[in-house]
Image 1 (cartoon, rainbow, N blue to C red):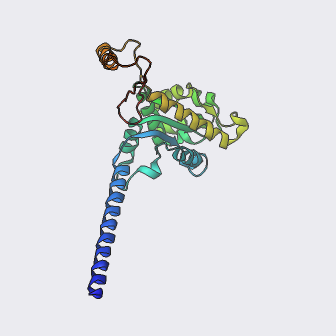
Image 2 (cartoon, one colour):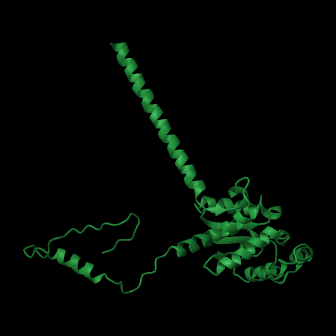
Amino acid sequence: MKRDLALARDSVQSNAESARRKADDACASSSSAASTGSDNYDVFLSFSGQDTRKTFADHLYNGLFDASIRVFRDNNELREGEKIGTNLLQAIKNSKISIPILSQNYASSKWCLHELVEMTECIKSGHVVLPIFYHVEPTDVRNHKGSFGEAFSCLSRKYPEDVEKWKVALQEVASLKGWESEKTADGREGDLVKMVIRKVLGELKKAFQLVVPEQLVGIDNAVENVLRLLDDNPDDNPSSAKIVGIHGMGASVKQL
């Protein structure tokens, strides 16, 4: 009898452990699907891999990630076999903010310039662009001088049909308020990363603020119903306390 009970107990435990493992696997699978199935991002990072992929762009990416900001950068998000150009441009459209890190060799990459053109197009629909001038002068970027001028000398021969729109995009983005790496925080890049993260969080918070008019339409009847319920029993002592319960969605603002 004892042996049978022990076998039964072991069988129950084994089944329970198996059920737990299946539940854990299902949760992991669901979590993975949720993380890879979404195409929306908070921030799109655009940068020259030759200049900053393993340095400043990497520090900024990890800082944003640690702040729970969903960031797109090509080496993390593109799947094998996908068309790089199409996915990069779609990722910009699906992001709220773009951060182009304009460095010495940025204009040498046609894909960086294509990204910049897409950003300027998205600005028209409320997209925010926060440029970082990394060891380059904004005037050089805007007027296509220095390394940017040299890059366009080569690009004009290879891609004559695209050069003009690339120049216009550079002028527009270089006119936006951003950060100059060598003049911000005395050149301390760690502090610059923190400043960018604070700005991004502020922009994201602003994007989700609810604009409520002073006079809420259709609220008067609801207010009268609540007041009538509070005064429903005329025999109550006027000074006695009343309890009002407010029901609503979690994390929503509820006021009385």
